[in-house]
Amino acid sequence: MAFGTPRVGLPFEKYPVAMKKTVPTAKVSTARKKSAPATPVVPSGGRVQMVDVARMAGVSAATVSRALSGHASIPEPTRLRIADMARDLGYKVNHSAANLRKGQTNAIGVVVTIGDEQPISDPFILSLIGHIADVLNAQGKNLLLTRVRTNHRAELESFVNSGQVSGLLVIGQSTHHATLNALEAAGVPMVAWGALLPETKYSVVGGDNLGGGYLATCHLLDGGAKRILFLGDSKFPEGKQRYLGYVKALKQAGIKPDKTLHRYCPLSAKEIEFAINSALDEGVEFDAVFATSDVGAMSALATLASKNIRVPKQVKLVGYDNISLSAFVHPTLTTIDQPIGLAALAMVDLLNEKIAGGASRSILLPATLIERKSSR
Image (cartoon, rainbow, N blue to C red; front, top):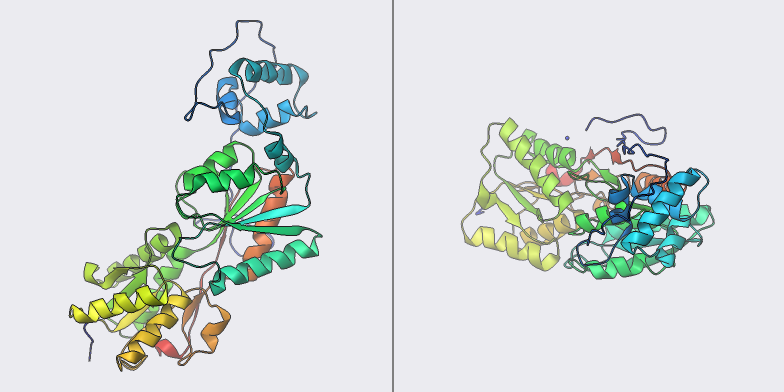
């Protein structure tokens, strides 16, 4: 009875799948110009930034950064030309940010930018932070943790400019994608955990969210499900990609996606309960649930039990993340595994590369289905 209702990569020795982005560097004329000063270009907000100097000079922001710091890799004529242009434009070096880029502190900043509805105590977030701390500790480095609220760009920029850390590990892109691109352009060493998005210029380590959503949905369809309730926040990058994987699997099976089965919701217990109860009250039929986090799936399990709907006999259930608790709930939870330990190691490795002056590149980690009793 029904109730009312997977990127092309390059080899990377430590990681199963990897992607590399090439960052083209413009050709630079080494002749120092004697012409009149360039006309300043007033950027958004009125303050000249490194990226503005780079655009006028026809070089990358990293080249400007090295030139202004006197780096030996930049020929003297080029350094002088860039210094002249920076002075003419009125650009002033932010010494705190410069210290950050030079890696002159022994601390790494970990910035959590997940949505306001998701607490920093979320088991997946805590586990990732813990693994990052272990990797940094093994390298003799310290961790400085902060949280930036959604749509509070100034908080992130303030932390960057504090000069307290030599690099940033950002957990979750939330709505800060443009800000992260701007920080990359300014030469800030940074790696984000999240989804690889169009026009991404900064380094990203993330799971195969599209593939994970596809795997979860295919598994439920293979088990006989026809109407799968999707519970997730597709407003944010990772949730959106998991939703696209869900849609891909449905279409491949010849099933037209039903908007009444897509329940946009933050994955808190209260929101999940409301989403399921709303579907039931509206008479929307479903025989399976795909929740885009294990915490959300466990909340769904509790809500279904309160309605005397048995999992998996009447409704099959799949979560996402494979947090440790997923193997201990009753019934045990089928989920999509994200290799958290591997993710932490990859993020720190890429950040070390960035601090050393390396180019941006991104790593895609595989998604794996862990089948347990909730879907059998």
